[in-house]
Length: 59
Image 1 (cartoon, helix red, strand yellow):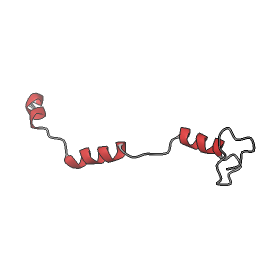
Image 2 (cartoon, rainbow, N blue to C red):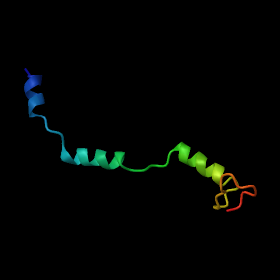
Image 3 (cartoon, one colour):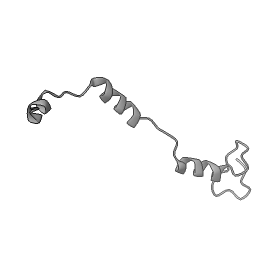
Image 4 (cartoon, rainbow, N blue to C red):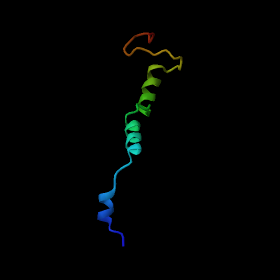
């Protein structure tokens, strides 16, 4: 029969898996909040961002 306590003592996580996890968690992914902020800054989709608080909205 399998002795789970002994098997757990033998377990060592794969370094490749650990490194991959670190790379994924350290990425700066665009989320929905980033998209909404961009849409508010550039409502016409022109690629020019409006300054917050400016009267004319021109950059």
